[in-house]
Image 1 (cartoon, rainbow, N blue to C red):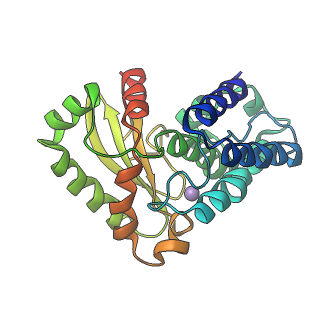
Image 2: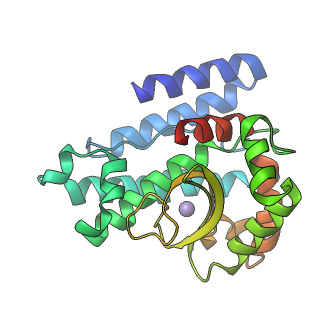
Amino acid sequence: MKRRIFFKSLGIMAVSTGIAKAESKVEIINNKIRRNLQMGKFELPALPYSYEALEPHVDAKTMEIHHTKHHAAYVNNLNAAVAGTEMESLSLEDLMKNISKYPVAVRNNGGGHYNHSLFWSIMGANKGGEPTGPVSDAINSAFGSYSNFKEKFTDGAIKRFGSGWAWLVLRDGKLEISSTPNQDNPLMDVADVKGFPVIGLDVWEHAYYLKYQNRRPEYIGAWYNTINWDEVNKRYSSGK
Ligand code: MN
């Protein structure tokens, strides 16, 4: 079901933007990944855009490695960790909510799968700019303005020591900023700030090192130009 939606959106994009060649390359790669995967419960989602789509903010090589190697490994390892156990019958969200009860391999790889699936979905080509829709009002009411939000979110993302994520979290109907180590996320019962993740930013070095080396702040500044506010609004509404 999910797979069909992704391919449908790829098709629409190829026609509407005239970059069918780049899109079909993504489709070939995604099919190859799928064949190479042990068919398990969890699947690597196809990207809804080409690896080049986020240039110059996030480079194509980083996107390709991040998706086909890093995310694919989280999915493979998660499937291996749940195989033959009671966890096989649980959704990813249910695993996250009670993660303290499950092995660390499920925390790391389940978190990795959830976080990256979210991350791909809230970015896109020719996006960024000021927020729109209900999430714009919610950002203004929680932080005063979008530029205040960016300042605080950037600060949290820069200060996350080592590998982790920065989050815009919906908690008790209000937006908050937080960060987590490794592949933890706000859905997990072990998170300091628990809630529904509306925006997630990957600040692992693998997300930016090829283009930005040690310059995490520069990567974060450029990444704002990829935010797909339509998708962020969808997440915000579903979290509400
Ligand atoms: Mn990553």
